[in-house]
Image (cartoon, rainbow, N blue to C red):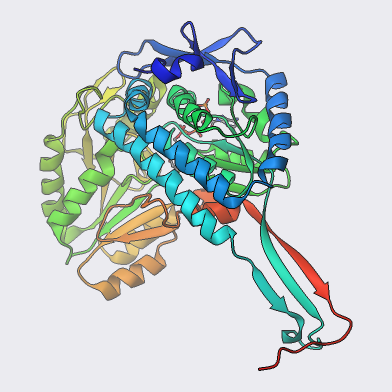
Length: 496
Ligand code: NAP
């Protein structure tokens, strides 16, 4: 059970502590932040509301701890990460329980998230040992006008203190996808978890504590992003920000100083269906891609663009599959569970009502009870409707009927987002041409958009992000290249 067994140290009464300097602490603010269970809509957990002074202390400790961590052999860093991964997997049950209570993640998916996170940490340790152990050797005579008098040795050095801010929907997985790369590369890390999901994240951080990482190397500051976010992201001791979330990321990128940014933001992933597509395959993928975790995924199918000639068949198949989804509580492992907050539910409702007013066809009755919204397919959506462009982050999928492939590509590219997209066709040549034309970070051919497997590059264009994620890319993003040049008094050429 959460907060018990090996986790008793992380809670004081009914308020979870924050983690700094290798210890679990109560904030001097005397204030806490409530985490409302999306299903019961009652406070389920409480976490510390950390102060700016506590953030300063954490940053100072992180700076000091990083210096000695950078001198820790790579194999030892990897060994500790493997240990943390094993501990995390061992305690998957209480951590998954937090995900069920804080973010209404269906029970089985919650366990999967924790196990996947353990695997991600181990893979990161292995990948780090390989790629960080290699540098480059360059000689000067390849550039015009130079003799072979300079040897350049490049190596990969850490950036310093990494600030990691993940979103609510994968608070464990999207935290370790930043923690693992940061630590293996020799950085220290300060985590600011999402408020919904903070308790799962605190349990996960405790697994790193149990693995025996040095004091101050990892810390976890809790509190509302709207209150301590700016202080964290503009902190002078932060050397890199890795953020995943919504528009907040755009605002952070304008305020942050001259430091590397990794931003994984929202998406409006389009699914283009051609006349020759396997309609059964497309329908299954739209349901899986659009409605898993109630549509609260950055890579959910967020707009279907289907050729008119196959639209009736597709809509009928998707409608029937959606009608079979189970709706209810995450504890019962239902397909559709309450969305994360009441304000999210209100936002989704606003998009649905706008579509209704403007004439969309409702394939199912719109139903809502508290934060629980029944899955809904909207047909005949037109470009003047908000749902054609905005990210519902809920179980509602709009269908736009198109007359040509160009119309579909145009709609996809007119979005301010560019995360992923997908195309369904049996013609590989068309699939490649369309994939190349879609302005998104990734295009899936004959499958729904997805983040992962976690070592695949993952990136968004336009307002969907800066930089690229995925284990290898994240490690490379959290290092800088350093060169040492050996200058010889006279040219030296290696003889055969
Ligand atoms: P969000 O509202 O942007 O919050 C993300 C994180 O930012 C949370 O930890 C939040 O903390 C924190 N935050 C809020 N205000 C802040 C500030 N001023 N400074 C610094 N941090 C601040 O996003 P969300 O609702 O959690 O997640 C949904 C969004 O994430 C969707 O748009 C989705 O598409 C996107 N997403 C993208 C990816 C990707 O890889 N591209 C993956 C998953 C989700 P609090 O919770 O305390 O407010």
